Amino acid sequence: MGSPLSWSSVTGLVVEGPDPAEFLQGYVTCNTQRLQAGKTLPMAFCNLKGRVIANGWLVPRGKQCVLIVHRSIVETLRTFLRPYLAFARSEILSQELMVHVATSDQMAAGDYAWLAGHYLRLAEPAGTPPGAADSEEPYSTEAVTINPLLIQQRFALVNAAVADRFLPQMLGMADSGAVDFDKGCYLGQEIVARAEFRGQVKKQLQSFQWQGEPPVAGAHWLAPETAAEAAQNGEVILTGLTAAKAASAPPSGTGLWVTKAAVEAES
Image (cartoon, rainbow, N blue to C red):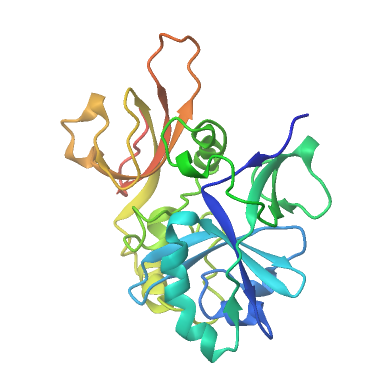
């Protein structure tokens, strides 16, 4: 059965206060009234221009809420929320939670239903998370196991390389249930809603396949076989590695990128 995988490139930020879910309602794109025990709720934070600065999942934890986000945007998110937290007499605790991914046969009480038969498990930190130093390497365990799952589910997890650049719709976040267009206001809501209802989104999330050197998040990339087509020029969000069938086989995999809305970017 094995043990749950330590997902070292993400972390759990604990929000504490009189009513953390009510506080977050004014800043996340999802509706916090839909929080349920044992389930993850996709969400994003936008700046005043409607661009996503962080995304991930929101979960309840007793009287607290936990934001599961990429480690590279933690300080940006803390700085972004600090003045609003102070006004609401709330805080993000300094100690972050470790995140593990469990399959259905590894699931235990207290886990949160996540993607396609997988669960997230939160744990108190016990030193440096295994693999934290190299979790962003293109050939890491996460690139072979977790990233392909995110790509299959079309969830574009934002890291520092792509933060502050895309509307939620460009990242497919409305499709993933991370954006609630019926809830009240949140930062960037007016621009996000205008883009949705006036058809102003000119780019969208697509999947692609790669072979050879894996493209990195934030890079402008052209599919080699269609490099002559300007429409194939996209910005990479996430890359997943497919384990080679033979040692001599070149590395290959899938990815998510943002490209022109009319382009289906799969080979």
